[in-house]
Image (cartoon, rainbow, N blue to C red; front, side, top):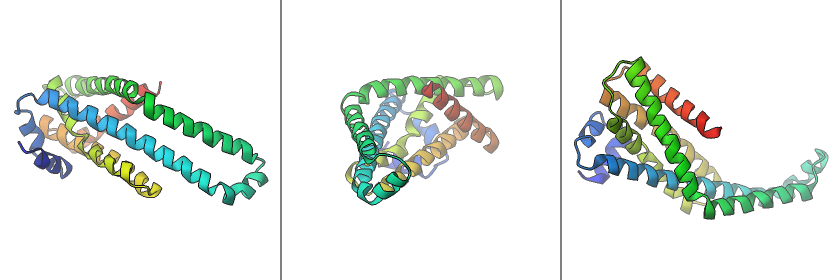
Length: 205
């Protein structure tokens, strides 16, 4: 199967793409590889966005210095805080990508477990871990567009790209779960919201 067509069909919420993917050879390994790639790319994009946001604060500091003085905040303290955040972002970029990817993989496994439990015990569906992993793995395809952030200096455009890709992932995930498990719209929405919010909550603990 042509992977360019796969990406296009997933993004436009094709109604049979995930069912076709499940019949492909070695699709489980490929879906995990896709997830790892998009997750690391997303981390790089986020760190790049934070670094540019801090640079923006540094360049606008002279224009907001008067407001800081009036609000009782010392400019030196503000500059020190920005420098510390910048160093933290740089250190995260160098040292934390793979540890964060491992943590993300654990959260991914938790999300798979949540979806499996809801499908099997609440919605009474014949459920298979492989199909859930394939759907979740390939539903992150929109995050591939985060690579644009690495080459685009515009802070506002970066923020828009991050927002759109994250929303798109929710839609592609819902589309995949709906077609594989023949879910109703309300069941799909509840499944996506519950699995995403619960796994995010566990990740923040």
